[in-house]
Image 1 (cartoon, chains in turn green, yellow):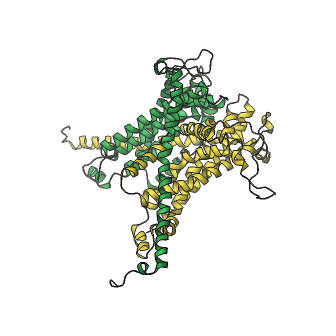
Image 2 (cartoon, chains in turn green, blue):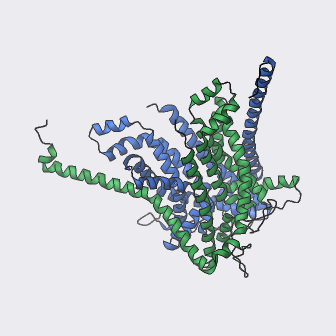
Image 3 (cartoon, each protein chain N blue to C red):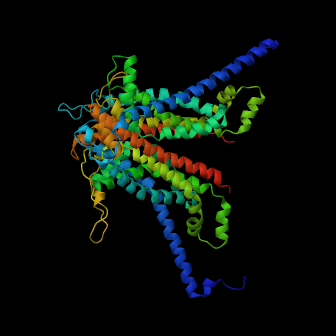
Length: 310
Length: 308
């Protein structure tokens, strides 16, 4: 075999075939590479687009006013451009959502991962997944027309639009994300850690809280961070149920607008391209993107710092 | 640690710990029940309000000023066409990107940047994609407030879902399959196209369905593009009578979609329109539940059938 040179070295027809085949392979590899690089291009496009329009915005409005003015009324004659009311709305609604989603999501995850019998787990997981797939506009409808009237029975003075009901429904909506990621993280903890703990006489709850949860910390942190960025970026529930009036308040019983709700409000109107109103939504979007990026980076660092390897 | 030498005291401590276990089980079931009951309440509320409005006319009428004669014809046609664009754009790009990252990518800085980027894109709020589409597709590329712009915006949004599903499906195929193909003289692409893609198709399909189910319900990015809510006409038909028989005019047509129609009806004060919103929501929820259910079923079948 070694004495014969390979066919394609001697036969010109086969040499052509080999070259064609090689070019064909390279061509496909380049195509695949381009589709993979597209994700980087999208990210860059997002940043460039938001920064480009925001730069024009900040030529009209100083950054100091943007960060310290307590009124956000860009569409009025007496225009004020203070992002604080929108940030306050976002923070309050997200906090309520997280107060619901993180404890309940964690309890469900611990229960499903450490306690639940096989059948309950097999039924609950797909059910929670379905719950997470319901469109957010439907949750908004539910918050406005079901949860708010219910809450008004308990708090009669509650207005029709309020942050409380939007936050509560958002929390329920986020539970499936938190619980499924937390549970995946806990189930990835090797069995022998649990067995060691049981052998020492620990109960299931002690094992879950003192052995499994610390071992799964990086995954649980990632789940929480995902929950936070979903709450901060959630749009339709707050746009429908919390009203769209920017209002600097920390009281969840009041109507208010979030950053996302403001973008929706402006988009519903017919603002001309290039006007200051058009640029405000990009400035608001940039603020939102920076907020979520900060959380993503914190999550990334936590994962790196606390990753356990077995 | 307390020093316990009395057997009764030990029994008492054990009893206490067992009680805590029991309390936690009850808490877990309670938390699950909150999720279940919320879903039930949501579904029941929509069913009671929306069911009477669901009729053949509801699906075949345009939106109207009078709530009783309003329907979702333009909305579901719009949703179908937008989803078509989304699938045609996101599926090839997502699968290609997944194949590259899993099979071709060398271990270097560029690959790492791409991987981190895919994870980051999945965490970007959907409304930001709307702003991107507004600036880039609607104005920069001049697509206008069209089906094409909306479909592409949603395609970008679900791209990470398709990429991750493709990667996971391909990764679960054992190396022996690849080695077998190479041993027979197959090139890399032949291996991927004739073996890896067919074997991972069920997993990829699951991811695509989940992605599309998410895209169907997305409202925020489409509002941001500036989709009109009152559309009482259909986009031009994709098939024509005369040569060349197909037309792409519908791509640039104004449109509305199901969630936008629902949002529009929810935000009106009249109760009659809110009943319409419930009916539209019911259709939307049934659509997404059916798609997600199909995906879950496919995954279940796959886990059962494939033993490498």
